[in-house]
Image 1: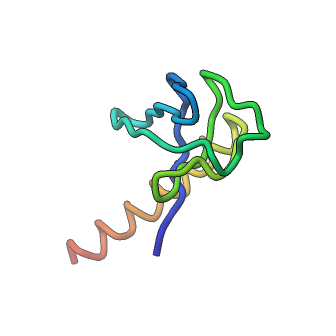
Image 2: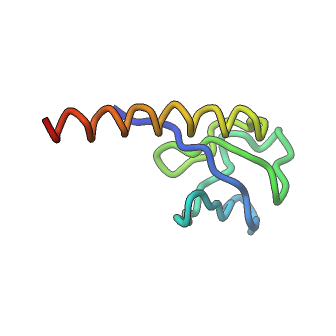
Length: 80
């Protein structure tokens, strides 16, 4: 299963976005959403090396909150 990860665009070179989230950086293709007009500072969803959607800062934060909850429950189930 692939999950889209909310990230912030830190730079753009042609059709490649440099993105960052929680200390991790990735390069992602903008090819799938060329019509969106992505700019540095935008929040986007990155999946399988592609930016798939532009999202609001609030949506990105809510998504990370859900992921944090999933990760916490996973850690708790491993511990006992």
